[in-house]
Image 1 (cartoon, protein in one colour):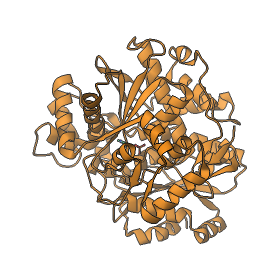
Image 2 (cartoon, protein in one colour; image 1 turned 90 degrees about the vertical axis):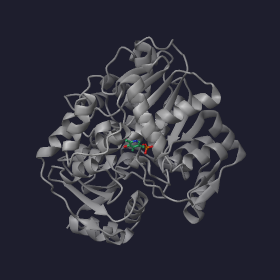
Image 3 (cartoon, helix red, strand yellow; image 1 turned 45 degrees about the horizontal axis):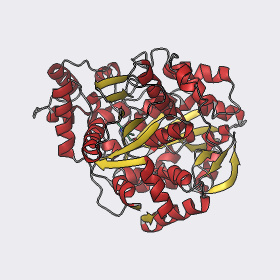
Image 4 (cartoon, helix red, strand yellow; image 1 turned 45 degrees about the vertical axis):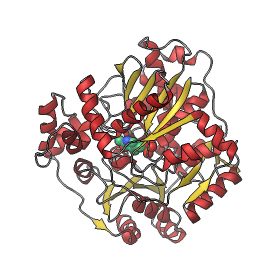
Length: 495
Ligand SMILES: *Cc1c(COP(=O)(O)O)cnc(C)c1O
């Protein structure tokens, strides 16, 4: 199967090209030419398999040119061998009768980005070999916190790759920052940017489209690529866990064969919930996709009105990985909802770039609202929800997950829809200790990494190992740049 661009239906790339390029030359996003459908009995047979086996099954449907022994090796390397602290990799845990929480943070960086970024480097380096690429790739990442660390962990010491991460100086938590600036590995770089996530992301996009830079780097034996969630190799591994969650619910006897479920996803760049939409297209019985936002609620308005309008104040919230006003992966959804109309998508994206706003056609709006519901949650509600879920269920959740729990509760009140729902939990509460402690009524915080022990003592929940070990790590990176200086940082790094 080949890949095409959301802005050009006629463009063709192989899977290996789509993954190593990251973005189409026209600025569109690479998307499978056809969406594979699950065979009739697939969910029932996958139900008795391991996460790694489920992964191989799903990946194989999308990755022509990758052998099943290759995929098996990657699944083992990414999700086996103690990389994840839970044998189920993405365990689904019952919260109450019709609410189940899928925990996507048992990986090496304690956030859901590991689910894709432990797999992507394997797909990436294999793709370079398949494309007969002689140059070394430099992965450029703009991160709102979790992606950066997860990408650094995934790519560290992978041959023929380098990675440089830009994070917004005041847009990540202390623990997130410490995770990044202490990163080990011989092929890694980390740099703070003055500004917010959109500044860092826009800066990185500019670097990608800078042809002079590309030329200069080629002479030095490098080319740039992306590990951001617009890369197909990021979206694809995320489809696996939605299929896996359905299998686990079946296995636990929580649903009957073929029974419909809802999913509720804390959303920023729209990558995670897009993967759920693809799982639904493939045949997983998902009725409604509930898109949960924080106060940066551009997606809530979009799903309710059909108008995407980024002209609004930007809020720094307690769920910083969702502090985003341009959800890049939405472009892939528009492509599907428009019946794969590349010109229409290109026109919306042009309007977004020029005016920061577009309104979808009535036909697209109807389809959008058939599949999606949306809501948002402010910081006060986020804290209340953390406290409430802890008190009622003795279950400790992070602020991003709390946004989803709150939005689900509101959705149920509004609609009366009591369908069994998988709430996606995207980070360990220990990545956001001060917010969680405050939600639980604490007002004084222990300094540095001692705050991890403070939260653990208060709740009796163990600190995840990768965070506990931060204490003993050296700070390796302290560079800060204005956004205008990002170009020089790249040139310096790839000297
Ligand atoms: C990245 C992230 C999100 C948002 O996911 P998208 O795919 O960008 O929508 C939510 N929660 C956490 C903890 C994250 O790291």
